[in-house]
Image (cartoon, rainbow, N blue to C red; front, side, top):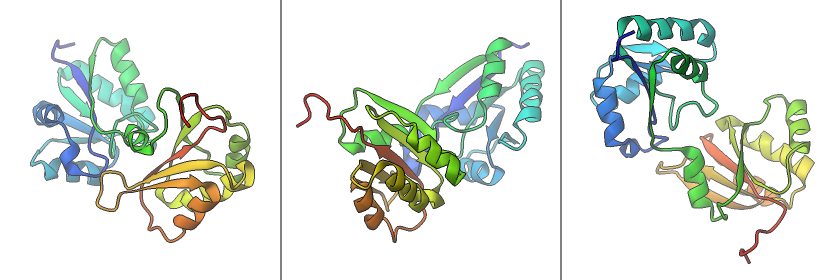
Length: 232
């Protein structure tokens, strides 16, 4: 293995292209190739910064076989690679964890390049006390499994969810059914984009406020049932 072998895990913008860091741009220009989830999104990102690099695909459809192929390429060729997601911090509900783990196990240096995060951006804009929260990620797509998962949620944490852009109405419907319409929550919609909105209210109010909202990326924060000390 060449001492040059490295895997950079690179954060990319979640909406506003100006949010990419100078370090991320420098790395993307220097690596030998870039690993992305979708060719179209990856190539569009690089093109927007006038960067030309070969792309390799790594997603939920090919992760098992592609992980070993990419690992062998980095190990045997001494190339450097950048792993990116479709937007934001890689590996939060994205493929690539196994590749990162295998790189660690095989002596390949893994270097994180931090940057924009939809989760942290939503929390920054939420107005809630940020000393304690739970990141849940995605609820099950199946309605019955989703309702079952909602019934098991802890009650003493503010909980951060990610969800598909087209599933907001279903999410609110099932949360109202399980948790009650008075439960407080926050929806951070199209963060960093011109259409950005932060909706604050109970589940019933949020359902009304967002009923005509166009499909778009969002982060959902469910408020704890217990009031924190120091917050009046």
